[in-house]
Length: 468
Image (cartoon, rainbow, N blue to C red; front, side, top):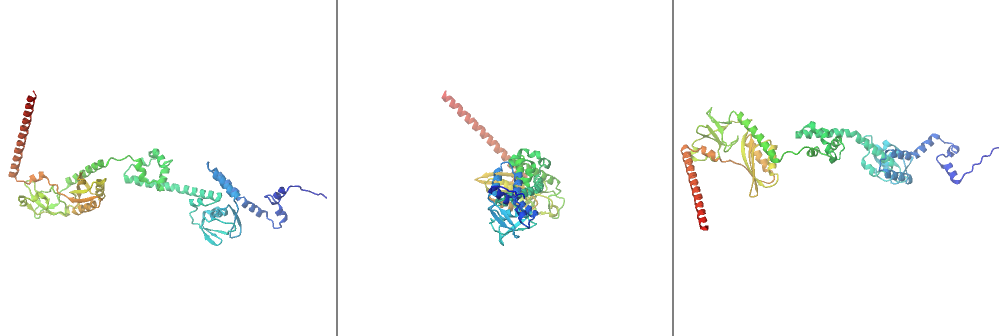
């Protein structure tokens, strides 16, 4: 008979009987299953796989985080919770239902939308205690974990899987966001009428990447698509500054007057008729600039046909002129596409950008400005405008819009009385007399000036003789 003796210390005996390699179960347990035992061992070592995965993805400078996670999961693993089927799940202290969900399965964690602990619905950031029975509610339509979950999850495995999911999701949507940004930039370029080929070229933005926190043109498009960088702000920085406000006003006036001259030259008639008479030469007076809708009168001039004035024009109020006035009427059918000039005077508070606001208001109405003059008198801004409108109702709309601007005291339509035009209405005799009087007056003024100079010269000579 052969007798075998085994000698070992108490520590060796405990390790042999209770350690990972213990074989007491398959020796003494009749219901032993090697497959089941391997599954249990695998579950016990699940945390080790998670740490291996985490160490593979760890970045430089995050070693302390890795160490803290390892220490927490190994040395603080003293919370034991149950699944509804009675399976025990071991988690670190402070773990939440989300940690539990990811310990069960990655997809359970990604699709988790709620948690039930001990048959009570609880928030997903609730801390679990030993003995809790935890059930996870999932939804296939869930958008997945959010970055807020990283603030309360406890296990390194859950945190790692959440980060991977978010990174993958951002990678999938980044291309779509870049294309959205590209479209938004193109729309802004069209709005500003800028060269698309130039401002969609990545080289245009090379020197500006750092100022926007970007490493490439795609990053800029991505920021635009995310709406963290408005396209208008980008172009304000990149596009060269335009000329000053007054340069823009000057170009606008030049362009508007060219358009107005073309319209005047192509105009076949004045839009005014005399009842019962055809073939007469009819002109709109430049002094009061009548427009359709105004109450008008015709003045029969000598050799210049009929001049059309507004009824309240000061130039036709003299008694000798009233005898030569006739009734005239607007021919609305022939002036549907014509535009007419009107003069406005605006009085307002002398504040910054007042003129700019007035110009912008008219621009929004698509009303052309033909002339503009601004001045300051007694701390008040005086703006005089000549604009081009279709009729009196359109002019009133412009007046109403300007009147809504902050700081406007008064706005009115004015009649720029022309001294030269008044002379055109004088009779020949009066004109000759006035010219002679003006000529005589100038001669007298010149003679007085010479006498004054001669007197001053004589006084100087006398002063010199006295000094000698």
